[in-house]
Length: 207
Ligand SMILES: O=C([O-])CC(=O)C(=O)O
Ligand SMILES: [Mg+2]
Image (cartoon, rainbow, N blue to C red):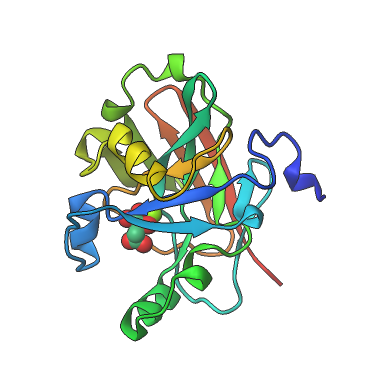
């Protein structure tokens, strides 16, 4: 294991399940139809990244976007949370979409899922009404509220459970609000949930 795996709350073998297009304003900014059922996709264990390690731009993309999202961590006695980034190779995703191909290359590359520290559930009494924000080099890019989600967290947990058995430690990314945009090498991403948690990640090329 490399040093970037130190202090992980999430473990190898656990699932990272992502919900897409869960905010109408983001679905519209990418000219997507607002869904009537959750859109699901997966990330790999090697996508997981904690603070102190850089986000690596895959060689095959010229347009990697940030997507700030509230993460739900499945626990034995209920859920906890984490702030997450769903880094997305947007040019590759556009190509996959036009060809009707899966999004794996666009969504599941190494370091595509930076996460904050684990947030115990007591620290977010109402996960359906917290602000999630992200700035790049000090400029605000995303500033949304989880009250804008189309599908609520309890609905998503029960919907996903019907398809994929959820186990302790699994992580669900609940979708991003509007404001996604491309990042560049050396950019610094700073993000937070209200005043509950914040995190910082740097962008590097993968070579
Ligand atoms: O790539 C997308 O636009 C879908 C997605 O992950 C989101 O809405 O959070
Ligand atoms: Mg997303």
